[in-house]
Image (cartoon, rainbow, N blue to C red; front, side):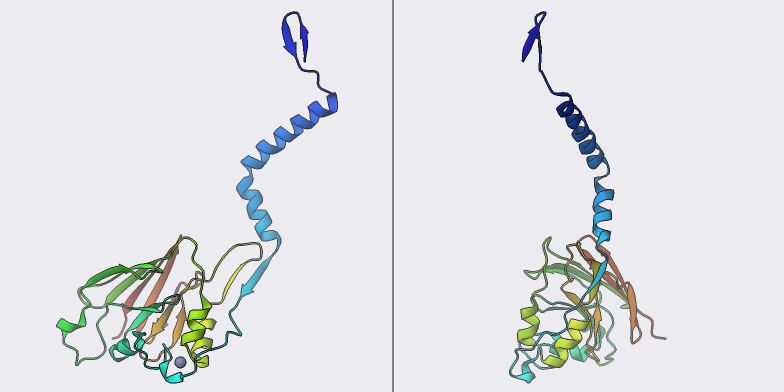
Length: 231
Ligand SMILES: [Zn+2]
């Protein structure tokens, strides 16, 4: 530091000065275009498919399969009779049923429960489920935890190989190679046929028998609306 006419000055070498100026300009530029630069970087690696092929069932007794067997720990068996459709939270195998009018005419309207609203927290996800008064439309909304991650061991330990393959196939998704993205630990199920349908973010809707399903993803929320389109 030098003093000249009572004022203080730093002595700085010309290249160092210009280097500092360039650094500051780059920082401002970087901050301003941060999102665009990040997006560019994400896309630079191209896309990749994430699949869960090759999961191996560790279930010894096929009869206790959570999907096709009869296990006290799975509600699939209970809901099978209703012929409705539902959602499965795969990390804790929590099974939700759409509150829609059952195809089973022998169940009286008072026991159908399609006019009810339920909500709760399974320990893995929070959900709400409701049905319209007519029983022709129902919706389920699931909120995933911020850092959700699919626990494949739950599926491997409790599903037979056939069911494991079905569920695993529904979990396929695409992402940017550099992107941090996890499989959504949810799927749709048809209780009548035990077919599994995807709830990953690329899937916007499908027809399951004569139920039309519309799927929406927003942040950590996944919601599905079901319309009974039977004549
Ligand atoms: Zn099975």
